Length: 456
Length: 182
Image (cartoon, rainbow over all chains, first blue to last red; front, side):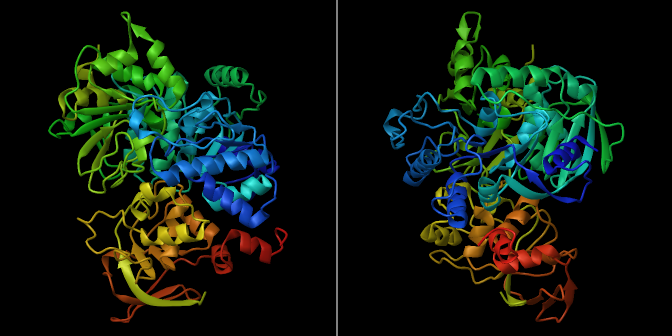
């Protein structure tokens, strides 16, 4: 069996499953957020009753992160609906925007978009927060009401996005009927050259197989190249399995996975035990692709889909209106450090927005100093508009007052994960996906720019 | 729902993602609240760029579409897991999408909610039909006939999915079949 099949067999209580089998699997964790949580709660109450209890109050993780820093009253209300439900159900893991369990969330636009407006429990973008707060575990099954839930595949976990109705079902029963996907095998070899990042690997792969090349399938990444990657790199890659239509992306378990997960579970006091899956001698794959990481170059996915691949160096004529770094895929500490390495000591020439994925990352950037100056200040002084309000922000457009949202037709180079028409706001705007380093180099020139021109 | 659906089609091409089906700014609406469900319908497919799709799926100021059938190319419904997407279309009175292929989560959400029949047709109908062409879809025979030309195309049988959508979604189906208690 493949890694995905082994996890699903275990979760289904079977010795063996194969691709195409429909099996009932036990969920280890269900995650929801402010955009799909209220609808999921609505389905749960409608179907199981107003007074029904969730299947396991310690296995539901609720993370408001999408439409938080907006004056839109419905969006603020949606966070309050989550808080009310958490109280009713005594749900253990809720990363609220405010500290008062009886309070109401109201964003104050008069304080501006840059200064933090959240309390001590707020965790930021759900996929990054799940990992940071010790909720990702090897060998387990994670369902989330968000398509980028697949990011947790970095931790040798089966993780996939589901809709509200399915999530309502899981909330009540702890189970879901799913089809075992075929597995596509991606063997990574070699190591990346300076100036090339994990984002370039996944953009290369999606360009290779097409925007729907992994539809209904698992993407398994292994080989010596995969082992050479950091945990953050693996998160970037697994996150974008969905951009090729994949059901999940998954990596092998190794010492890096163990160190990360053990540190995070012990730091947060979450469930520490887990049971990883290892590769079998006999795995059946539907396809094989070997990727030599040493041959990859900075890569762009051009408007209007993530499979529309070009090399950054071929795109130098494209004039940009703005640059954006942030999101689950591209807003981690390591992403900002690579971005800052290019930006340091220079100035951006187009509007450039920086949105760390979590408050922890905000703190990392403020406390990491290079030559006596914090990375945060290095970026701010270069003209990057850095917000402390960690969250999904303009990655998916959001309400019109969202930080960094494109409210008119323009072209943006972005470290985020999706670029269908209208993704970051105005429906005639265009998004070009790239690594944080490429976004940085492009912000310095106002055109798509290969970061190796600036890499030291 | 009847087994034959007849009406004018609305035609879109490849890769219509969930942002084009329901733009993210409207995800503040909660589908299980009745008037917000209705409002979602008024925004169905309004994220399609005007430059490519000058005619709106739902006319400005209306909550329902005049097109009960949407015809699409490859990878319809790709992108996010937002269930608001099939719900917005269903709320706008869409009954069926005939696409060359579907993205996985959207397909599943159509079935789980019972809002739409997601039918896969290997013929590229989005290159054959134009907005307003009237077709007759027979869900039992798995055929779609174009009224004007009389030409018939077949689509893949829905299999087990058919009865779940017929029942009005996952929960209704599970109850009717005693899989969960009523």
